[in-house]
Figure (cartoon, helix red, strand yellow):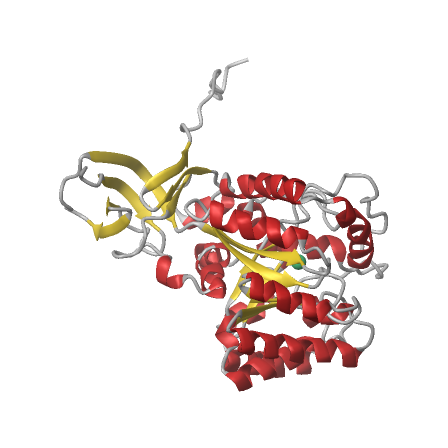
Length: 424
Ligand SMILES: [Zn+2]
């Protein structure tokens, strides 16, 4: 039997205690200690004062859609959510298990190379063959050592607008999907959307699954399915196991309504997932000027102590062409659109793509930078959270269970810029 490798990372600035230099002792894939003056190790890695953060979490991505955006019949001329759904209806008929796996793997590769180690993916189950789901169930197992994947059984064309959609969702849960999905604002009437929210909660309790609903992804302030979802999961006591994705309409809602809802969200413990780049692009399409930003009330949710996180949503698909799995870019856009850039907020905003996402996915037991947790973390090319965000810092290394997923050389120039002022 070989001895497990013991590694000591020195001169690290550990996120949330980054005002001092620390050491991280790793053995057997687990963080043994964080502190100073720690025992020796066979391998010592000098991080030279760089920031160490837990891995990025992408809580909302559509891995069955990735890289279909520029294919035949996929072009979304209006740039709206609803044309995106219509285009996908045609595009999905051409996918095979092999092509779905191949594209998803490319999408996962883009994300992991940018520091993501946890992904929740919505997979369209309004397909009698469940091709995308089968592909993703295989990948979830095959890649489990490298990236943690959760699958949402997502009825893209509706639980009821698509005949038998609710039955396909249940079939997907039986096959191993982790979460129940829904899209109430796409059903053909408010009452039917409400029925889909009721069904979502029934299915989650029946099959002991998490919930993640595409909820109110519209500028229509009368779209208020989040209110029903929140009430039902609060009654069942499963708010922390539930996420409301998008909730764009809350950004257009009357203030009196929105602030009453904030109090109820605090009570339920439900999680919110905002998709800043996609919704800034897709929403406001019926506005002339002024144009709405398309985001939910990220700042108010965050300030109220409601758990809110950011996700990527789309990597080159019929909804949004230029997603690339870069959560730092998503954060950059999100904090601008949500106007959360006080120095205090800048110091903490990495939470929105790390800890808050982990809480939404309920993976906190295996996530974080304390002794006893799996040694999974990123080394960023910055010496503080503020500099990481200001410089949109690159990920220099991604460590998972004590081993490198990748490690890059420090950035360097073949020709150094010489900016010394010259007398003329
Ligand atoms: Zn989505």
